[in-house]
Image (cartoon, rainbow, N blue to C red; front, top):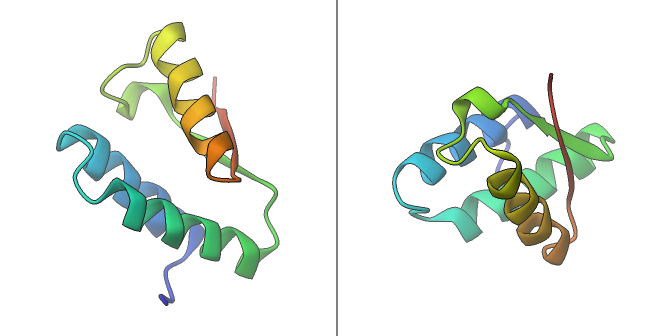
Length: 76
């Protein structure tokens, strides 16, 4: 579907989240493809770039991505 790098896919998700989750499912699919292409098991997000960077917001995000089959983590 796309030739995005893992970082480009993650950046698109930041933009989507900050635009009220616009096209989020599309970007999640692209992230999953980029992770498979690069052999990465976990996508790492920076909490400071998230709309809801508190613990509850991160847990909701992890749950959402887990349902999509993607493991995510957060940088310190």
